Length: 317
Image (cartoon, rainbow, N blue to C red; front, side, top):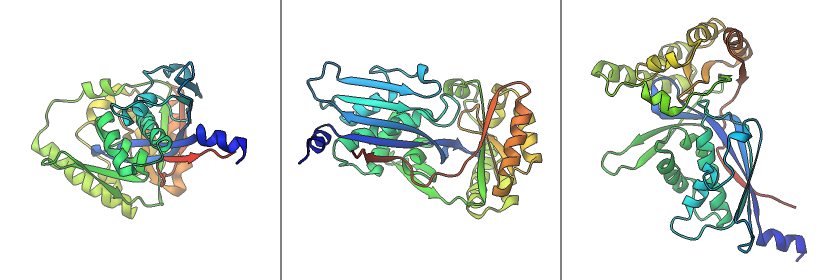
């Protein structure tokens, strides 16, 4: 056996890639999310137990300076949580950021999923993605971001009130529908976005959202334009959160005038998500950027739905 192969077996390195996600998608508040073709990348290397520093974290990419490099790092917290009360192995973690922080694109979900995937890979992959998902939900508190980040595609989550367990259901997404994101240069914390929501809602509001979520699921699968235009409406969270996102109304008008079926807040915001015909994606992105750039720097992207979810691959020589 070659010396390099011996070293790799003793100190394996795994590359983990996790997609960004968009959650809620209008009426799917806290239960619907989709994986997007934008990624954070992570590299996990097992270290000898005798190393002076049992935790080494390096972060690269835009906003890297905002990410902790000690035991408070969310990737490492998830990594350590995987081992429960057992001994946590020494590890080097390299992070390459591609998903903006605190913008409503599931950056925290990528960290949690990556930590669990990296730990599982170094442990010999004894757990399935479904088993890892339960740990990820427990850490995140809700499944709408971690489920698609781990599994890919669009996912609907429902909780069994008897067992408290989660059922995750894959939602078909027509290839004719493109997600277009507009990402501004300001942050919006999930805590702030939660704070503006009322403590309760009426039966009328609940019925409105149940009906529109059902219509949205049918619209996403079929690509039926009329269904999607109606289905993206919401009464549970967006009317309250719009006030936290300056320029929302102007960007929404621009997106729909450019051909989008509708526009919603991605996750807790401030990123805005428009859904439209694939042929109109670039025009929608340009319109959203023009409408918002008068007051804020904004980046737009025409993305696709990621179908693979989180991946872990051993690094070859």
